[in-house]
Length: 247
Length: 346
Image (cartoon, rainbow over all chains, first blue to last red; front, side):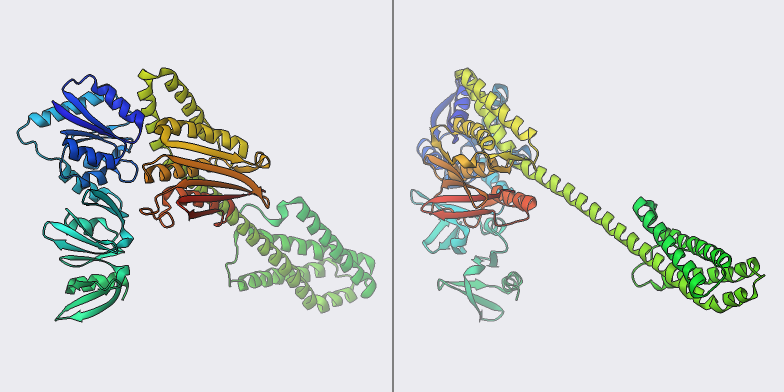
């Protein structure tokens, strides 16, 4: 039995998935969710094998929701997004269904899923998917993090700096710091390069927060932030910083 | 260039009139002022000014094919001197051989030859100058015409593009809703197909530059809102008010729908609660004022900064249509995002 959840903000869009599922007795529908928040909760609670996921949803979109879950179910996107946008991550999701889709097309998607499950090499699919998505998505305007059981949306302007912390990245903001299970490279790629500069192997700084840059040991510098925070600046980082600040 | 100042009838009349007046004055000068016998004076007048006319025409024809560029006006002067010199030589020998019988007249021709050259130079100079000015003005007019034409085409293309970008997402989601309704509530599906068709026909039929009445735009907008309400169910509600005098006021077609689309997107995607979109129209100082409001989440949104594609394209359209940037304003208050649109009534 495949255990599934539908996450879509349009009731009729959920209804059609439900209706198409009636032909598939091997799929059990555990929950229907209106938005990403409900989605995160339901996934945590039910640990489904499969989610049908819309991309454009209230508050947090489908991609952002996937970033917040620890459990990685198989994903079938159901979206009205243009084909070209979705092609890029096609290979990493089980399938994507362009609305409006037919029962036949829907059946094919489930067949693909069944093939994947039966092949011995099947593993988590969401992680590589997310890496691809972050490369094609426009520069992020916000970062979504989980703080205990709460979901927090941080506008990028509120970020002071980011710091590598083992397998996580520590995001420093005026409301404290948050951990996110991502790489520094990911943030360096996805954040606006005119606003955020990787000053050091382990630091990315919001240049609008910098008040002063002081020399520090040989060849190195240190950036002092408005918040009083201190950020390491390597030799190459200093060159990059000078370029962006125009000095 | 294929035309000259003389292709226009009006200019031909002026030119001939000027020539006649000049010839009459010339005759008067010879006959009364210089006391030359009338037959000699007449022949002199006709030959001299006939030839002058030909010289002027030659200069003007020449300028049809050659337009001096800026700073090369000495070419014009040389042209006029050459034409006048040629003219003077012909006159000198032509008149002399025509009217040799009268020695006092021959003497007069000899004495007046320098004066004749000066006159010819002045008159051909005038003709050349007028002709050149006329041609450069024509050039400029043509350039301007081409420029406005090009601008108009670019503008139309841009408007078309802006409009296209707003549609597909809405269309596909609506079709998906219809697909869902087809089995469970076929009559609703049919109704929605009807509304969607009317809406799409409306967008296809209308020209970008076209102005329509507020009341028509409102009916069109209602089609759109009804469809969106089916899509989002009870999460979306609307409140529309408009003063009676707004009804007949004009606004550009298809301007409001993207604005409301933006408000719906913004409202619905920014909160998980139900959303009320309010639209209010009134008339103030010869402006149709349309206010669109949607709720947003104060904690997570920065509506002031990222107004997004929807609004910037409307701003661009207003600029293209009215050449003004102050017709669309956004403000936030108390968790409400308010767009104020001002349409000048021409």
